[in-house]
Every structure is written in structure tokens, then in C-alpha cells.
Amino acid sequence: MKYVLEAFQTNWIAPLGPNVDAFEKEIASYVGVNDAVAVISGTAAIHLALSLLGVGKGDTVFCSTLTFIASANPILYQGAEPVFIDSEPDTWNMSPEALQNALIDALIQGKLPKAVIVVNLYGQSAKMDEILELCNHYGVPIIEDAAESLGSFYKGKPSGTFGEFGIFSFNGNKIITTSSGGMLVSNDTNKTKEARFLATQARDQAVHYQHSRMGYNYRLSNILAGIGRGQLEVLEERVESRRATFELYYDELAQLPGVHFMPELENTRSNRWLTALTINEEEAGVTVQELLSHLADNNIEARPVWKPLHLQPLFQSAAYYPHSNGESISDLLFNNGICLPSGSNLTIEEQYRIINIIKESMKAVVEKLA
Ligand SMILES: *Cc1c(COP(=O)(O)O)cnc(C)c1O
Image (cartoon, rainbow, N blue to C red; front, side, top):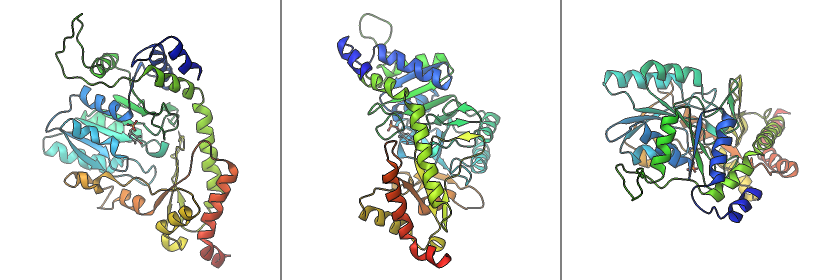
């Protein structure tokens, strides 16, 4: 409220101003990069990254398949073609094996991708060492889609800082929010300077309005940046609260038959944006659908995991590389996965109500085992 009020009192009601500058500096300093550019959404940040990498018509871009549509839509904005890469079981994120197969094929076809978009699903970092090694070997830049993983770490290094570009989202559902907003981060300050230029209609240095390139109207409002500054101050608390939510679900449910929680890779800290798990229907004696509707009957909203992009009607004709031997891990995760209520303001009492309903759904199996 303090930062938002300041914006009004100083009359900085515009897509620029002191909160925007400060929010950029604070995010850059929090994740330890040279620069950050505040924009209207995470989607806009991905679009700018692709634009800065020169992705255009006829190019291909590799992208994690198990993600929200926003990871891939900007590939289409640029007239390029997505190629989707499967998950692996340890992180649910991009499979280095599938990525390698896709890169080898691309090399043989003489058409390496212009970029690889690696998503850190539900706060868990992908296997960045393996992915970086492959991308460095083939000379393909990485855009790290860290929309869901602000506050997460991979081997001590903040999520979003591994590629040429990283992006964060401050949409209403993310771990911190500006209602709508995003951030593009990079160590390449020439590129971030160009990003600011493109995000403000690519206006040339001149007193009259002059434009030599096509730009966008993507800059974040000074009021929204004020919300972001306040939110960033409580990020650490939010991560702790989401991790505590995960721990309680885990302690209460992990021993039930057929229940498998999304793993946390060794040497990483997930912000546990959402608690996600899979249900083995035979062992659990309940299907994901039954569990979701039992929760819904009790006025509790839980959801399946993201529908993989290679299964989306929009991307019917896109190429897809499964994890290994034709086994598609993302299909399995989609068919058996469920995200539990994980909001930072979820109370312990509410959480126990959810836990008890899940236990009740599995009562038959649990009693048989006892
Ligand atoms: C939310 C999200 C985005 C897009 O962010 P917006 O700010 O909503 O545009 C991109 N990728 C992933 C994985 C997301 O969850």
C-alpha cells in the first residue's frame, strides 16, 4: 500500500516511474543478474526474449511440453514452429534424453532450433546442468521460463538465471503478484536495453516520434510495480508457507497406497508453488476424476496437472520428442496427476479438511491394508 500510495501522491500513473525502476533493481538483485525489465506479463517477457534472439518465420523453437500454453504462444507470435520436448520422472521437467534426440535430429536436418524454452514446473527446477551442457554443445540459447519458480534454487543458484534470458510472471495466481505483470532478466545489458526499447513501441532517439523497427506496448505500470515491490518483501515468507503446505500434505498422504508426490531434485529448493502428486488408480482404488469430483462435492477446487502442449488441438501438427523408447512421461503425469489447493493463505484447518476428504476417498483401500 505504501508504494502504491507513493505512486498516486507523486502522480506517477504511467508505464514508467520510480516503482518500475526500483522493482527492476530489486528483482535483479534478488536473483543476482545484471538487469531486469518489468513488463505487463510473463507472456510478454517470453515474446521479447524470442524477439531479441531473432526468432522469426520458419524457425523452430524447442519447448517443454508439460506447461501452461503461455510458454509456447509467443513462438507462434513470431511465426516460428514449436517442437515439444517431454518430461523426465525426477523433476517432471524437460527430459535431457528427449532434448538430445531432438537436437541430433535437428542437426541432421540442418536446422537447429533458434532457442530452447525450459520450464520449471510448479516451482521445481529442470535438470539445468544436463540441459545447459547440451544447449552449449549445439550452440542453442536457453530461455528459462521461471514464471512459476521465483524463489526456487538449483544447486544454490536462483531459478531463472541459467539461460540467456529468464522470465518471471506476477499474474494473480503466481507466488507473488502484481495482479498482472512479468519480468525479463538477463546478464546481457545490451539485450535488456534493447528489450526496454522494443517494449516501449521501439521509439527512436528523436524529439519527434520516429520509429525504425516494430515494437510493442509491454511496459509495466508504476502502480503495479508498486504492488510488486511490496510483494517481493514477503517472497521468502510465501515460499516457506508453500513449502509447509507441501510438508503437511506429504506427512499425511505420502504413505497412502498409489500416492506419489512430485519429487524435489537433490540440491534444489522448489518454492512448491503448487503441491502436485500422481495417483496410481489401481493401488489407490480411486481415479483422479473421482478424487477431483469428491473434492468438488465438498466445495474444494483441485485440478489436473497442465495438459501437455503436444496434446493440445492448437499444436496438432507440431513435432514431439518423448522421454525414451516412445514412453511419454508427460502423458502419464497428465493422466494421473492432481494439483492440491496450495494458496499461501490456506489455513491448517482448511488443509486438514482437504486431507480428510482425500483419505475418505481412499478408505476402501486403506481399510483393506490395515
Ligand atoms: C503463468 C505462466 C506464464 C505466463 O505468465 P503471464 O504473466 O500469465 O503471462 C508462462 N509460463 C508458465 C509456466 C506460467 O505458469
